[in-house]
Amino acid sequence: MLFECVHDPQDARQGKLQLTNGYYLHFDQMTRLLRTIHNHPEVRRFAQVELAAATGLTGRQVESLGSVMARMGLLRPVTYRLTGLGSLAVAHDPFLDDPGSLWLCHYHLASDTAALVWNHVTNCVLPVGQPMTAPAARDTFQPFLAGFTARSANKKLLEELRAFFNAYTGQGFRRLHYLHETGDGTYSLADSPAPVPPGVFLAILLLYRDRFQPGASGLEVLATYAADHSPGRLLHLGETPVRALLDKLHEANQLTIEAKANLDQVRFHPGQTWLDAMQSYYEQ
Image (cartoon, rainbow, N blue to C red; front, side):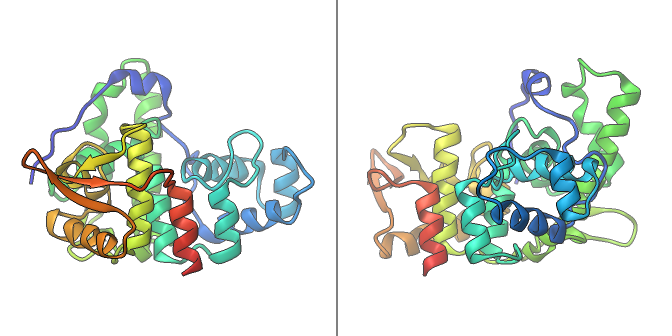
């Protein structure tokens, strides 16, 4: 299935080509950082040098991890304080190895249009269905590079793409079975990704609503799996698995599916938030 992707060059000026500074995303380092911050609730704003000394990481590593973890929804930018999701993760999933946590962190990062590499690859490159190498993926970024020198952009892009592919094949995101790697440095979407728990899918639906249709009381079912940045597209779920998840949520009275004007629609309960949905998932 081919997807239409929206390319906005403005995203390149507002976003970043590189979040990782060329470092791979070691999830044990992420959890070390989360625990260190959690253990010091009296600190209102952490300095990178303080976190480096407390965790045994370098300042550059802390900067890299902090940048990515903020895009994952775990840390607040600048202050390095835990977000609501970060606090839930420390309490319920301290090793960041629960598939539900990983799927939500994946969607947080992949749907962030300012995280140019992660968003473009998951939203536009991989869903086409063709096997992809890091250099080939780099070539798809030309619409975003007007404000960058070619040498700098190519170097940063290749480093970030290598970190991206490694995150899903060699680091914590590998538990999602989202990517398949062949022996020659080629990657493609895996045939059987890890199941998405219904409660986590609800959280992701609400996050999608907040980011791309703020204030909406519901969503068209078609949009949940086929639209730009939709949960189905970024989680590698087609119509059948998405509808199965929606049916489970409807049966559990966590949302309502209704037909209106020949369109299937999902209706959320008033006041539902993605963080509340995630807390319910952990507590259950």
